[in-house]
Each structure stands twice: as C-alpha cells, then as structure tokens.
Image 1 (spheres, rainbow, N blue to C red):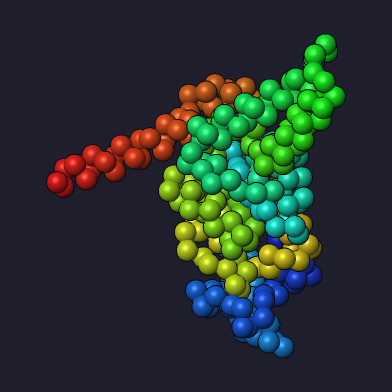
Image 2 (cartoon, rainbow, N blue to C red; image 1 turned 180 degrees about the horizontal axis):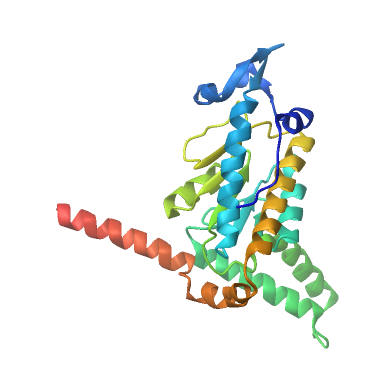
Amino acid sequence: MKIPEITIQQLLEAGVHLGHKTLRWNPKMKKYIFGKRDSIHIIDLTQTLELTKLALQKIHQVILNNGKILFVSTKKQASEAIAEVAKETDQYFVNYRWLGGMLTNWGTISNSIKKLKKLESDLVAENRGFTKKELLKMSIKKDKLQRSLGGISEMKKVPDLVFIIDTNYESLAIQESVKLGIPIVAILDSNSNPDGIDFPIPGNDDARRAIDLYCNLIKETIVSARNSIPAEEKKDTKKKDDKSKTIQEIDRDKLEKKFSEKKKIN
C-alpha cells in the first residue's frame, strides 16, 4: 500500500500543531494535546503523524476497492478546497449546507436532485417556451439547489467513507454517518468532539495551509490507489456500483433489524 510521505516538519510548516485558545478547548481532546503556549493549545504532532498515516491507509483501501468518498465541510476556510479535491478525484462533496436527511432520508433528497436535473435540462433546452420571468425564477431555484446538492447529484448509493473538516460545524453529517455505519475520517482541532470519529486526525482545522495539506495528501492517496487498480477491475466498477445497496435499502435494513429485535424482547 503506497501512501504519500509525510513528515512532522511538513505539519509544522502548515501550522497543523496550532490549536485554539485554551479557554475554548474540548476536554475530550486532552490525549491529543502536547501542551500550551501563549494561551494556545499545541497539538501533539507525533500522534497526528501516525493517525494521518492510518487515515490515508483507510482512504487508499476504500479507493482500491472501488469505493467512494464524501467530502464534507461547510465552513468558509475549507469549502472551496474540499470541493476542488472531490471534483479532481471524481468523489462527492457537500460544502454549502448539510440538509437534514442527506444520507438517512435519501428519498426526499433524491427528489430534490431530480428537480435540479430537470431545471438544468429545461434551462439549456431549445424552444423552451418559458417567459423571461419564468426563466429567471427557474435559474434562481436551480442555483439554490446546485449549491446544496450539486456535489452529490451523481451519488447513487451510500458513500464508503466520509471525510470531515471541523466536526463542530458538521455534527448532523456525523450523526447520519454513524447511524448508517459509514466510517468517518475527520480533522479534530483542540475544540472538537472526537466522539463517533473512526479515524481522527488531530490538527488545525482553520488555517488554509493546513487544510490544503490535508486535501493534497488525500488527493495523492486517491490517485495512488487508482493507479494500483488493474484495468479490468476499473471496467467492472460501474457493474459493482449497480449491485450495491442504495442508501434507502441500507437504512431500511437497519430499521427493520432494530424493529425485529424489539419485537423479540417484547
């Protein structure tokens, strides 16, 4: 398994070690804190280095198995970066607003995506037969849906991994991923809550240099994994995707299992 080389020096230069002011910390992050300087928590980069490698190995494994990753960060500092890496690597992303039920209520979200695609189709079609006022309304509605759903418009099944920058912003995404049993890789700053995160990466989640470093490492890992996939397997990816369970099916299976267990107890 080939993942990008990374050193503590790279992490230092990107400011990954700089946490928040000590007053803002989350006590659950104590084990990842090296110390404090000028009322700012310093993150233990020795742990960050090892945990980053583990997270990249997981990402490599997911891509090697023809899996898909959902990138999530709606905060200003990271929204453009995660969208860019997702587009470049043919993954999914949410960078504007996480709509409740994006994973657990896929039926409703799926209908909204269909509306988005119809609007896009109507707006580019010839002989549309709409007035200027109608076209303006359609364009505004399309832009609104595009911001929220554009990054997942081609998502046909539950992602195999979710990558999150700033768990405080994305608590809903974490809840839904945990409910569906989707592994989570997340950047955890000194004020973050590590609960529910399968592959934590302790580090600064605000500095643009740090965010760019995380995204570049993931991008390199995805490219490396793809280059390791035999050509025949790449051709079969679409067939495997078609056979995979949809989000609705997975959620329904979980709920049915839970219901049957309760029935046995009663």
